[in-house]
Image 1: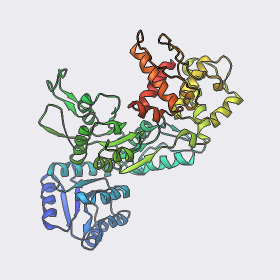
Image 2: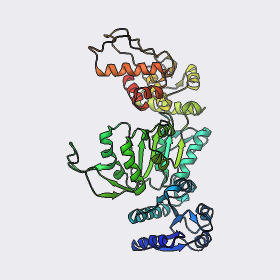
Image 3: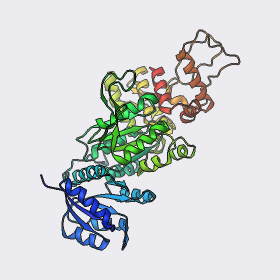
Image 4: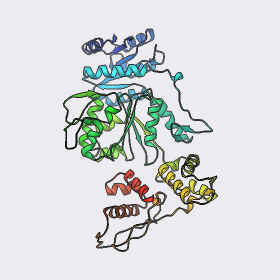
Length: 471
């Protein structure tokens, strides 16, 4: 096997020699440069696979080396080595195309593992040889997305440009805008696409089990741990790990996630041994992460470690003609699944599609179309006639039988409220929970995000329950 050629750009002789010794022991070929000028000459003169880059150099800013990489022999992966106080500049380097960054002091295990991974990523298929799904004027599709609005084209271009980096991606946007589709698209565009894609919902797993789900556990670590189990991080080794609803992670576990990101090592619950893991992290939230940091619910250092490449997904109502394209595609699929022959939308429905604000985004649109297909009788569907609103609770014995359709949550017609001295006798927990959710939706005039915040749950929890009640 051909050894990896590593160029170390570091003006501290002791550090450079230390890195070189560790890498040479691991079988790599190493060259050293103390200045930017020497590094540029080396990059233009001979091919290397990996560049280990210090940002503080005697003759300038290490970031300027990226100007030379386009002319360099080969396509080297760049690993930035930085001090804690320079994290913002390290993140800037990753946005310029660096593969990863390491924080001083760097452990030998972490250094060798990162260099090996960077070499593998840089030595994969050339861009021209990689089959890519592209956006076309006629189809407007991209890895599960439908639409060719300027907002979505910008998202597609970002996904393409960051796919082969190891930089963490932080996807934000309202519920139902396609955050997991974004993570899957990044994985499919990357050289990791032959590896596993593992998704874990940090808001759907109880706090006491989330660490085990993420990092794994050993037999006997806790009650119910009857066998050894690898976690999502290890299962995604060589691929992509998607952490959905990241802002709902407990603060104590956030510390362990940060350590994992900094070291590349995991430790299973109940084990004293650390294991190396090579994964690309994509995370997502429908909350405002900066607000979560400001209010003390999310660690600032973890946020900056994750928010290297931010992607903000536009709401469906902001995507113009994409709405009709998505609706046509979903209608065809749903009609086939339900065994209906549908030729399209009524004129009123087309107007409704364009005018409705779609607070639940694509998920709400999909539910509205499925309901219209199931309940409709003609060859054209009319989603305007979908039932709306919920019954007012007038007595303790009231039976909650009419669900709140997803598309109704933007209107003030949701009027469920609790009378004074309400008695929960003879009611099931599910009925009580439903009443609380309906009242919260009513009080926020159909704003699911605000309703979820008032109840202390995630918006996706409310959407899942609305979907279940609508069945």
